[in-house]
Amino acid sequence: MDIVVCIKWVPNTTSVNIDQKTGTLIRSGVPSVINPHDLHALEIALTLKDRFGGSVTAITMAPPSAKLGLEHAIGMGCDRAILLTDMVYAGADTLATSYTLAKTISKLKFDLILVGQETVDSSTAHIGAQVASWLHIPYLYYVVDVNYLGDGKIWAKRLLEDAYEEYELTLPALLAAAMHSTHPRRVKLSYKLRCKSEQIIEVWSNKTLGLEANCVGLKGSPTIVRKTSFVPEVPRKKIVCKPKDVEQAAEWLIKRLIEERLLKI
Amino acid sequence: MSICSEWDKIDPREYRGIWAYLEVEDGVLGEGGLQMLGVARNLASQKDTYVGGVLIGKGVSSLAREAIYYGADKVFIADDEKFEEYYAALYAEALASLAKEHKPEVILVSGTMRGREFTPYVANTLRTGITADCTSFEVDPAVKDVLGVRPTFGAYLIAHIRTLNRRPAIFTARPNVFPTPERNPAREGEIIHTQPKVADGYGVKLVNKKRFSRGTVPIEKAKILVSGGKGLGSRDGFTILQEFAKVIGGEISGSRKAVDAGWITHDKQVGQTGKTVRSDLYFAVGISGAVQHLYGIREARCVVAINKDPDAPIFDNCDYGLIGDYTEVIPALIKAVKKLQARKTE
Image 1 (cartoon, each protein chain N blue to C red):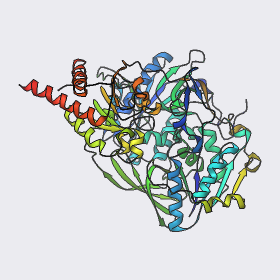
Image 2 (image 1 turned 30 degrees about the vertical axis):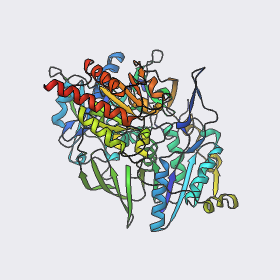
Image 3 (image 1 turned 180 degrees about the vertical axis):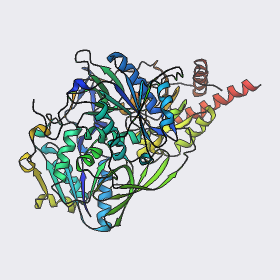
């Protein structure tokens, strides 16, 4: 089975800081990582390759620095990686991004596409459905387990709020891996070193893809950010203490919560 | 202005009405869709247009009146054998087909698991803009377009997003952020039976489904939540929280770190990548208060923080805070509740 995994190189949003003096976001120096949810997509793809053979190609659309993310993917065991990078792709929303990814994938030999459920920076969860839509292939979200049935079919299990569902999908198909669905494998140095000696990471620009400028980047994006603002603070009482007598403080608090009709006993 | 040749030309001025997609769960209208009817009502009155409700499924016609009672002026129904089973692309193409025919200005879909799965496909089919996970909506005073407001950059910022020149503008909204409107059986509306164009098959077949009960109230419905984070130190910490929750009639939940550590399941995760909760009371135990977590507890009425780190950001975002070791504080709270309960029964 030949598998394509779409990944995203994202700022590590857990390490962002606010400048206390100016109240602004400190973006510089924020390290980037592979979107953590994409690691499950890579793991599912590589497990399928281990069991049924074939190849795994990682692709990303990003500025050149995202090469580090693809090196990580190679280090996990991907056979090939493609970095889509071009100024005309900048400013893309999910429609334009999915279009560029879908056009790239349609140039590759593939049976299955895997994506992470969503990204930690923008959290739209759009890309899987949109790539499937451009390619007119079946898709399924929240996938926790996959098996190849042979005869151009796969079995996939997904977890909803109150149910497990099992599906059969006709290949080619797209699956979005659920968060926490696997234990992603670590990078092997011997795999990663291949990036140094071989041309294992290809860089494609719009010269390679030849897409219409009106369909990609900012021009191909129907949505625009009208403005951004800080998240307004929720007014809270902020009655905080470090009690000497914990039991006394606990009783005070419980009584208070009862008075405020937040708690009934 | 030239547009992408993959997009059809449209005239945005022809598009009117605010639609809410109504997901049907076990034969009744899902809470999320009702919340969207409430949002649609509000936007429609600002835009001076109608509220549309969309029902897709088999045997869903009987729910049309309910949709009207909750705020729809027109209900578009696709009631057919072929919609018996939900498949993302099938439902997406049905909704897209209705939108092509009836031209709404806006489509709102609650961001349930299925809502988030099929709505991007609708947007793509119509070559229009989609904004995910909105937590509020506004009508831009200058351009009069509906803007979706959503957290971005890991909930450090909120973005106000506009769909430019394409229609309908499509939005998914975060479940549980918006209130469910009141049911008014005196309301009247129009019921429109439709036959959306869909393909015969989508290469996907449900072969097995196993329902299970989590045995607890879903955290988004709980009145009282006792939530644990990394500061619990181990899975055992949740045993103490569970005991406290039981005593006060609450449920347990957790932060992303507690879920990542495998101490609690993802369906109980509070925060930007988990759920928004609307509990009256929210105990944050051993939770430092990362912005992503704070985003999920904005709708909680009262937040009580318990943490041994006096500098934890949660203390700037709580109503009551006790600085101390939870292994001492929680048992003291349990004791206090039991003491008051005993006094009451005397």
